[in-house]
Amino acid sequence: MSWQKYHQESETLAAKAHTLRREGRTEDAKKQFSLAGAQEAKALDYLDSSKPRTYGITAVSATALFYKAGETSVAQSLAMQSLEQPFLPNFARNELRSMLQSIWNEDVQKESASRFSEGQITVSVSGEKILTGGAPLELILEKVQAVQSMYFRTVEFLQNLPLRKKGPPSKQLLSRYRPWLFQTVPGSYQFVVAIEQPQQGELFETGEIDPSVVSRTFMSVVSAISHDSEAELAAILPDKDYRSAFLKLGRNLAPNGKSAERITIQSYQSAEPVALTASNRQQISTNLRESANSKSFASKPPFEIKGVLRAVNLEKDWLEVIEDQPIRTIKITGLEEIFDDLIGPMVNKRVKLSVEHNGSKLRLIDIEQSDE
Amino acid sequence: MRLKFQNLHTRHIGLTEPISLSLAEAAFVLLDANHSNSPVLFDLYDHKKVVETKTDVIIQTEVSWPEVTPRQKSAWNNANDRVEDGASALALAAVEMQRNVVAVSRAETKSGSDYYLSVGGSEVVDLETATRLEVSGTEKGNRSVVNQRLAQKIKQTESGQSNLPAIACVVGFQVKIIKMADSM
Image (cartoon, rainbow over all chains, first blue to last red; front, top):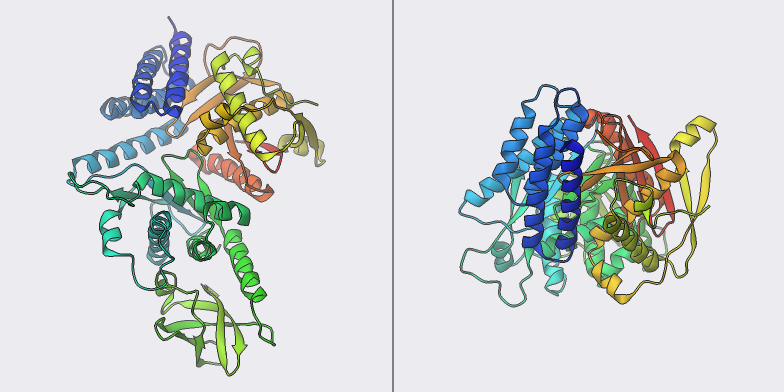
């Protein structure tokens, strides 16, 4: 036998495993992945420093197969043995480290008293000002908050609840779908969001949604936003209020092109990552303002105000902005389409508003955070 | 010129018949879902040819598929699986057409599988000179999504995360475009 024969045998078994997984036969798939991993590990034995690239590709493949089989201790051992080889190419080193970090995260989660559902998502923030493993705190807090908001809204949407305009999510939702943050391998700046399962013994009540379904829907929504596709978003979110809410939250999540250039989101369930860029942010703003302008009856055109958001009272329908030039406090009304988790993070931050005259008052068309 | 993405196993030694038929079936389902009639014309754009010829070369290639059954649609219900596999079918056929290379091997990664390419015909004893094919697909995404994905794939490999020569190929099913570029 040779590398070639064992590797080909591994490929055949892996193909069967993928087919079984697609058919929903998860346990059978894992068995096939395990058999494929064993063959790939044997293939690795036929390689040495004279074939570094082949060694790297095969090492990653064997580790990945055992990882997919759920045999994480075997995968870990194989990865660490391979990493010891001085001739291992960088591409393989990076991929093996990434798998080890995933394995360690999963081990920590298994050992903890809490249990975590399928459907973890990884969020990466990248750009010139982002370091490997480091990023401005304010930026990360903003993105973590946006992800959390969108996640809870996805649950509410799937539960067919009317769009929540005021207040936080219900206590029941907060206790059933608690998101946790885990670290991941530094590539840009990355974090993993995992959802804690209900405590053992508690079953999902009627109307509660499986967290893996929430993650899939969340990814579909973000994907549609990244495609700038109104039609795709409408297919997922037929309710126009939810659509508008997700677009606004998606805009908060998308980078502004200055502090970060790209936000990439990936879930374990979806091989393809979804990327949000500054152009998505601009397109969302354009679409929201065009939609708002089309409903306006004001005689004068809308105009822009830039400043710092100082106060918000959604109950009494007003917000106050300290404008830049001239420096003055402006009160704006018409906050029907604004909600807590959208505007809360903007308080005491620089904002850009589109407003129109409504008699003697100013009515809000749109508001977004601004670095200008 | 027709894009030969069916029966890839007859030319790509790295694909068995079951894999080849499966990839093609995923592509059929996607094409059927996004276009009312077969065939359609896809724009095939190869950045390497653009650089070599100093012209904006776009080749139009005919993509055809048979009638898709309800059973096939149901089997490929998972959007991520069908896009990943369907895009692989078209990408493999596209690189074969443009670069005269075929898949000689497939290997697993954490998030999926990668194909390794070499000049067709010869049996593979190792992957030292093989080129990795990095495939990305989008069902509903527009041209800017395709461009964005291609740029992302290239940036990923150039940033030092990979020192393996690769061809990145992005397939947009609804927008009917296949774009490829070399990274490294």
